[in-house]
Image 1 (cartoon, one colour):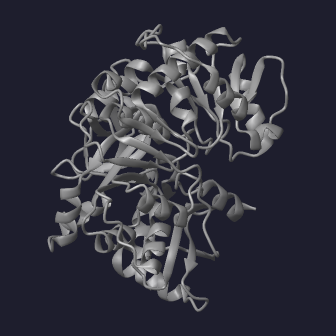
Image 2 (image 1 turned 45 degrees about the horizontal axis):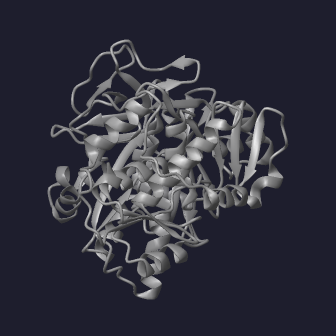
Image 3 (image 1 turned 180 degrees about the vertical axis):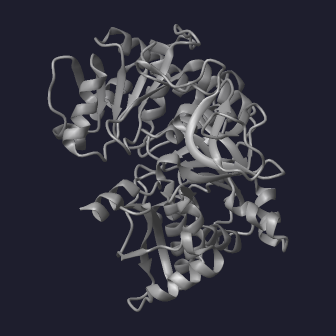
Length: 488
């Protein structure tokens, strides 16, 4: 559809070359023809972002072989375990990573150089023709494995198509618009960036790996108008902008998601970049990406308002997409009222809720997200974290995010994580792991700070000081690492 509309418009800018929509179309079909001839029923990609990734995304669909992008940041043993689970398959691996992969009979390996050389010699004058059906598997994504063995989330063509068509208008981007993609290809945001970028007609510019200085340089050099980051990225980008005195005049919109955004960071961003539209996008792998959005008007109204309820919305993830249904349910499955905390359930055509050999979606189409949250009177959704992270102290459910938000307002706190630790009397007690701005930190004073704003049951009983907190590459706090340290 994009090729038919604007065949000569630049679609992809990579490290070595650019591709028009027509070139991407023909190249994807040619790679698909090659992939069909290879053994195995899956197409694996292990590498960093570049122009070859969108080619493989479309080629896998055209070949009828689901794409399986792997997390190259995993230790070698875990990475090879996941590769074993893709068998039988054909895998394209970055040259710098091929030494990490053990040979195996049922996985055919090609280096990226091999693949790029093959692409240079492939030609195909046919139009794009799909052989796969809407219900065929399009994408297999391994979950982050925060608890136990990573599960394999299944997304079908129907789910991805529903998400793209319901959120993006075909070829709606101006010809000078460009989107910078720095989220990794093995994350749902990396795949959806390809699909929505192509459908919207916005040029995709790849940054192979995120470094704040490189991100700013690329944004300036390529005149980037749109980008997506995770919270830890945004904080580092703001540091660079402040140090350089940069304003990114071409940047129109910056979306963020993938983890909890500290309110102090987004307020700072709004102040430094008043011309930029900020969008908070909340979603899951199992829902084909975004299911709720806090739009630019919401951001500006919240930060300018003196009404506590409106100001509070800056800490929400906005309202659900109009194509979806969303409910908050209690432990017995009952639908809860406004401002009652429970599990977030979502239903819609883009929701997969499926894993290999396991269906997670309910018979009536509702998907339990395992995220704790609540809705306000105007339909704004507030996410409190994973249900597994909720602290149960003496039968009371305590949200770590609520305590973290209070501590982040303290002038001496740079970062904080709140977790539950085992306690013989209460079941669990509240522990705060803090990154102070200076060595002189008074935990008693911090306890008084929390108690005066919340209550004594939510005041941490344990305090741990660290130089930094553990995050994964998509900005999610690794609470399991902190909990393991606290229970040793």
